[in-house]
Image (cartoon, rainbow, N blue to C red; front, side):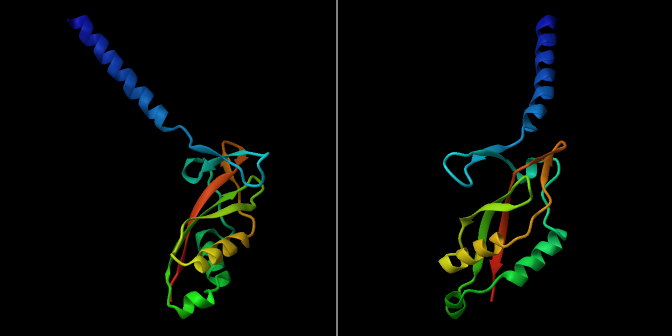
Length: 146
């Protein structure tokens, strides 16, 4: 009986030390940003050691969006507001690529404007895992308010 209890405790302790290691696995997906011939692994934003950063930080990003965002005429005229949730990849050279709408604002012109603003972004500082630069997926909401 004592032997079974010790074995059970040993198994429990082993599981308690192994499970946290499993939780630290990095989330990596494979995307095809340019053509059907080339694929690359992309790390998720929260699972890299050093996250990519817009020049000027978060404040710089907000200023860039506010300066470059233009309210589409028909959306403005019809008083359409909303948030466009976008994703894009910051490559190992810092360039923004593969911009997409994850959840649109209900008006296609707002979605297109959000993608246009993201496509104009300058190079970001790169994301890193260890000492290696890696491509990182960033999710960014762009708000349209009147």
